[in-house]
Image 1 (tube, helix red, strand yellow):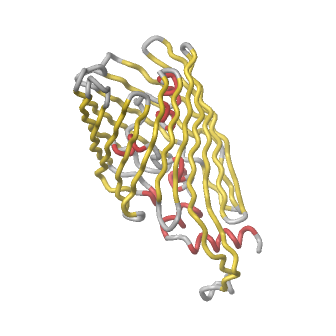
Image 2 (cartoon, helix red, strand yellow):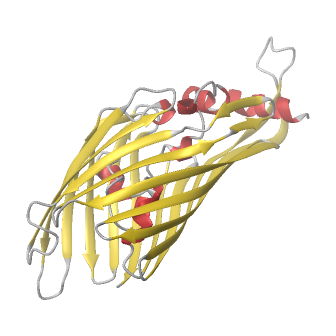
Length: 317
C-alpha cells in the first residue's frame, strides 16, 4: 500500500478529534499535539501555568528555566489517553556555576488500528490484516545562563511524527527569559517553536509557534518553616488560535522534623484548544521528601474523558 493510502486509512480509523489533529493542519494550533499537551503533572494541576516556574520541567514552557536547576534534576511523567494510547515526558538538567543545561523529551503514542483499503471510497473498505500506528516525539536541547536576578535561555527543538509508514519532522528554535522581581515574585516569558513546516505524505502544516507570559507568587516566601502557598498564572497564545489564560493555587504543609512537604493544587484554564480541549477545572496533589517528589494531576477532557498524570522527580542539591 502506498504511504498516502496508509495515512488516510489510519486517520479514518481514529476518533474524529484525533483525525483533525492528524490531517487538518491548516494552522499551527491544529498540528503537533504533543507540543501543546501539558505532560508535567504539577503544571497540569495549576491550569497549565509553567512559564515562570523553577525546576527542570519548566523547560517545556521556557528555556530560561534550565538555569533554575540547583545542581542536578531529573523528572519522568506519563499518562494514559484512550484505548492503549499514552503520552509522557522526560527531562534532565544540570547546573554548573551560572549555566544550566537540560534535555527534554516528550512523546505521544496513539496506538494502532487495523489497516483498511478504500474501495472506491463508496463503502467501509476492506481490512488487510495489517496494523497501522501513529506517534509523535519532541526533543529539546536547552541552555540558559543566570544573570543576577534574571536568566535567559534558548532551545533547539526537533519534532517528528509518524502516521502509518509515512513520517516527517521539523527543527525549530525557542527563547525565553525569567526574572525574580523579589523573593516572593517570579515572572517569565518565552517564544517557542519558531521554524519550518511539517510535511507528512503530502499533508503540511506549520509548527504551533507559541508565545507565553507567566508569573508565580509566594506570599509567605519560599522558606517558610511550616506553610507553603503559591499562586501561578500563564497567558498562552498559539499561532492560529485565540490566546488562553490558566493558573492555579498550591497550598501545602511542611513537617520541620522530616522535611516532608504535602501540597494540594487547584487550577483553572480558559481552554486548552484542539482535540485535547480540557474542562476548566484541574486538580492535583504532591509529596516531596528530601530529594524525591511525587506528583499527580487530574484533568477532564470532552474527547478523552478523565485524564490522570503521574510524575516522579529527583533533585540533587
